[in-house]
Amino acid sequence: MSVRTDILVIGAGIMGMASACHLKKNNPEKKVLVIDRYGAPGQGNTGRSNSMFRNTFSSRDNQVLSNSSIDFYLHLQDELKIDIGMQKIGYLWLMDEGQLSASEPHLRLMERNGIEITRYSRKELKRLLPGMVADFGSSEEAKLIELPTVDGGVFGPKCGRLDPDKLVRFYAREFVSSGGELAFNTEAESLLVGPSKRLGIDGEPFVWQESLVERVATNTGTIEAEVVVLAGGAWENELLEPIGLESHAKAKKRQLFSIRAKGEKLEALLRCKGFNALDLLPLVILPKSGVHFKPVSEEGDFWVACEDQVNRPFIDLPEHDLEKYQAEREYYEKSVYPILTSYFPDFVGSKVRAMWAGLYSYNTIDSTPFAFRHKNLIVVGGDSGSGIMKGDALGRIVDALYREEGEANLYGDVPYATTKIGFDKRDVEKEEWVI
Image 1 (cartoon, rainbow, N blue to C red):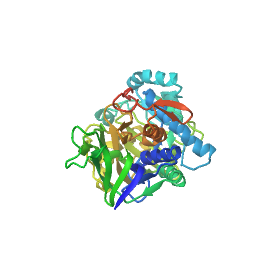
Image 2: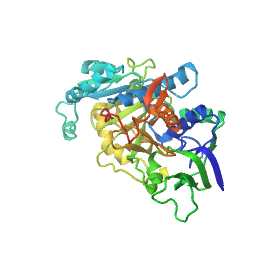
Image 3: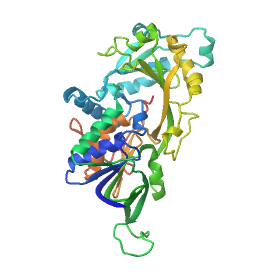
Image 4: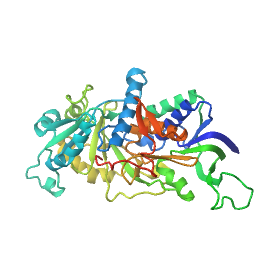
């Protein structure tokens, strides 16, 4: 079966649905089709994410992309009363003196760019955080795993969590109500390249012909499109590499562990006061190894994770079945648990209630997302770890690339040059403020 459309979007995660929504809204006369291998929007890595947002970045570009998207999400929830599960609980980085000193130039830049942050002393943190241990004295275990002390902290109030399923379904509803079409259980298998002007000669396209993505082969047939938008996340290389294009993105497995806030002390930590209007613990990033945890108050749980880098292999061509990537209980018990319980001993004896894994797709050049156009193909990605928090801005940039405009209008009337996060004329700083 062969289908024809004006714009084909591959992927119904946050990137694909935000892009499709803005494309249809700003080009109502165009037929826009979104395909996805799953049976509903956001069922891939979007649905397995830690679903956090922040505007605290060292890079001006990441500040702009996240700030604009967060403002749009706040507009949805606070003004339009569309529930996307948004909670401004904040991010709290705990650091030793060396980390605080190294971070100070980034913090001053954030403040100059209007990013609100609050600095806390060790004394203030010990008052605010029930049960926190800041100094380990002569602890042999702390010496063995080389735990830094907590000498201070940095808090970002315009940060927090939201519900990725509710957000992606909002975009899907808007898209469909505008006349867009969704085709689930439809997997893109390959991009089929052809000549822009077909001559009817065997072997086309030849090197002297201009070539473009003519059709997309799927498990249900081929789809012909004037423009193809690839928002395939961790699976983009599978489609790009066979036609000789590079995304500079690699995937890594990431794991989440859910711990019950059981007992009076952990319940007090979950609902500690003083950081936000919700009287909830912020997302807390510990000084060692990127271990962090956040409150999930509606479930009475903490979600614990670790952004490990070394010894976590890149995956160039991930499996299609995400169940192949299982969370490792031993990883929590031997790697995460010793760090978590050293800083917060009230977690001693806590058990993993649930655990799951997903894939991050990193831009390995500068830890900033990309969006570029190559003839009639638009690619957006490299956004994992920040896809949700920058999703709306990236969707608007994709729409501007489609209309071949040099500048996208982000939410809040923020102008942004579309070439900045492309690759031909890329103009971004490397992101240094990474969890």
